Length: 329
Image 1 (cartoon, one colour):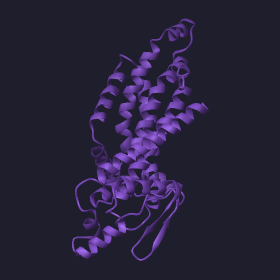
Image 2 (cartoon, helix red, strand yellow; image 1 turned 180 degrees about the horizontal axis):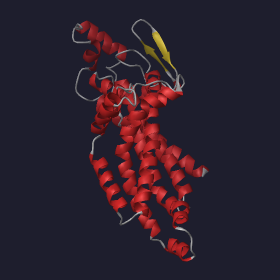
Image 3 (cartoon, one colour; image 1 turned 180 degrees about the vertical axis):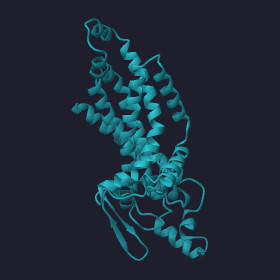
Image 4 (cartoon, helix red, strand yellow; image 1 turned 135 degrees about the vertical axis):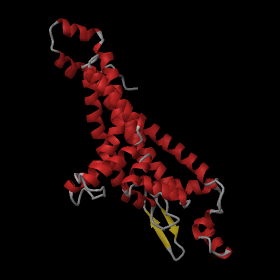
């Protein structure tokens, strides 16, 4: 296990370095005058030149990239025009638009996206796995056909459609839930969960359909194995077979998929955060791309990549725990 974790840590570091190189190559070589955009349309050529010098935009791309890497590991000093600001490691740079440290900006947005992703994952696992198990258990009956139709409809429905319908019906007409707004968990845990319940449900209804189909297929495959037939021949009850044996073997691919979806949620939360007005990383990334705030874009992409790599490493460990036939390598 120790060797596996060390190999995954080294692989994660290489992956993040590759991501940072690609992001720099795409955004810093992209057409457009970053200094003019940052300064504003009414800036004089002298002011644009001053911004170019302050941001060191005349330096070669590899020099700026090396400075960025040094900042991540050791910290950096930045010129703010009126003085010098020190950015402690891990330093992801300063925002071109607000002069705020990118690390602090991300840390302010991270709890919102993390809360959205974590709560939605728990809910879609409960709904999806439960539906998949019930569908496999009731194979060939009306229950299975109804659940299959529901999961297909859920897979084909965009999140903004379900989100809008739920807000109109649940929040607007029935007044069962408040319109979503983010309340920090440390301020009021109950209001934190109550205000995020609708976004969690909207995302879970979409993702649960995928997990239900995967769980059903895995369960049917596991129930057809020889050891399950042996259990039945010895008179073991069907509920015991499903709960203690078939579900454990079928849960391994669900773990791998949930890790990918949880990591991707950090980069793909744009629609859900925009729809529900949540000030998370997705909305901030879209804004940074619009105003060409390159340090924020690079920082957001790296943090998203970090969570994707971390989630997959954790999934590999849990996969081996769920299925003892898997060997960590």
